[in-house]
Length: 146
Image: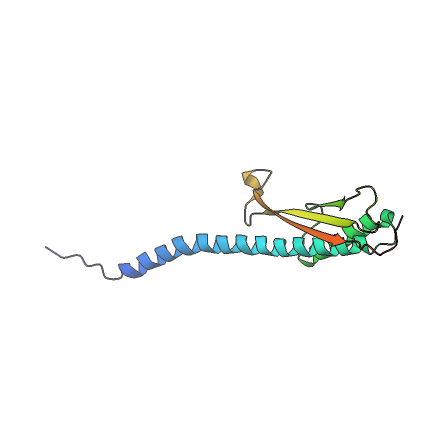
């Protein structure tokens, strides 16, 4: 009767365990990096859009300038504005955002698609939504802009 030995099987078991544990860990790291990059871009976009809105010469030019500033900030992180949503609100008078004492609130949200999900699994890939809100005071002692 011959005796079986387990010689050499530890290397195979270690390799399979490493693969089974490292592949999901690598996927989680990729997803976290994508969400962090998008969160940074959305935060920068909200801040830049708020600053551009308040520094505009008129309220008619404020929104296009703010959207352009948000586009540049998102493009720095290679995100497209087509998927993002930028909204503006003013407090206390929503009808006159560039009046003394107003506060302009800019909200930018972006759906971050999960990495490495093929389109063959469905038309709408799962995503994680990140959002940033930035409030910019117009200033009590500034001139009223039309």
